Length: 627
Image (cartoon, rainbow, N blue to C red):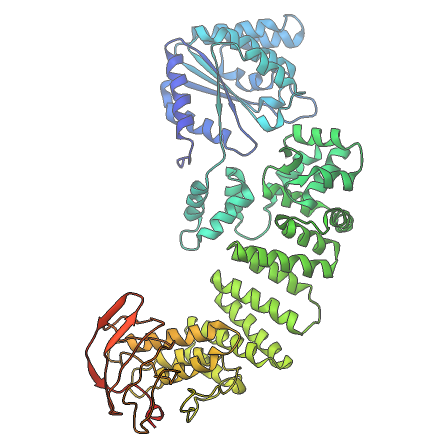
């Protein structure tokens, strides 16, 4: 049997109880935990570790309408002595009182030559006779070489359950001990997921697995075994089986909580269910289906909620979602409730409300760094955007594309940006069209489709104008168009794949930086700056592609070149740097010789101080800068 995760401490404690029982210090151990927590697995692992040193007898209680009398004792009676069998037969025929069975069992345990471990599983389903047997043995087992382990679901044992009385009666006995099982931690869930699919498990997928299962081992293993999306049939049947035992009023409460999502506030429950729902909520909590936390109730596991929600009829879900949406929407909606409102609006078929709340929820998730949730909310808003093809749909596509890019869904992000660029082209918004083309081209480059990324240059010809042929001598280069934001990506694509010295990536990026300085998106100038700085730092390339611009305070008197140019400007790669490093200072001072073919860098001032770097190189300024 494979090793159990995060159950070693409980197993060591149980083994210590068995060892003490070998010295005639018997124990009654109450092993509790929620459904699917792994109580049976722990008992089986304990039996394997004990081996032949002790005899292990396991009996079970069943969820029958009328429980079997002394059901777990009947299961283990054939492996006990003949005295126990005769006493049980006499009690069944009415020839002997029931307490003779208890005395015969205690005598059998006391006279046994080997230590005995008896396991009664699921005693929360036991009959009153089994409860009396636990009381009897709990007070007398300490003088025998026996250990009695009773497992039960603590989430199904409420204050009104008959077993609660038994627990109270055994609370003061010295031989009674309690051992609880906790849910698995996120680390253990990731370990299980990695063991199931070592090559395909992503940390985000394991975290989502933990979120929907809550660390319940049964839910985790069943979901991993199913592999496909959705709730496995075994989990669905287990959850719906528990819900079916509730009263009709409690089942209605469970359906409403499933539609609302966990946790469901008491105010919304009152608005949807009306008065008199308190007893139904209490019954659902005592059964273990729901959990109360203050003035809200929720499911123990998100997977259980999904199983119940899938069983709710569509027309019923539509009605409950509409009521809940009307009760929760208002001017003072909490930002944390926006995802719930978006889901309720979608179930209620209110498309304007879906677009409103989904967009707000997506922006909220983006601001918090929850980009996976943001992408899901943008997708929800797009599903209900209808036939709109204006700037609103383009904004949704751009937001979805950026969120998909951040969660490494590159193909989907490229498709979204491509569609957004087409919508911007239809609207005549050249500036944002160029920005979308640039992003789409960058996605193609990340996918390794370089030829297609370069061809994207021609997708929006009006946004990719070439650098100007001649600038203004006294005011710097003329801005050709505000819609030139696609060109930084093109300059990046030009600079990265080419290695020849004739490549004009630096000039192109510098020109685009000038054109983008006056445009709305600051990202364009930043992209051009990064491209030029990267170009200058590559081995075998010029150290800087910065062109000197004439500013107030500069003197550009010679047509053949600038005898002296001193001023402050902003630009990419301001100062020369060491080989393989990028210079990205924003404020710089330069001095160049009169020759248009050579330059000597003088004192380069940056935020780090003044560093003299004498160097004589070929002039890096374009030819038109010296005319």
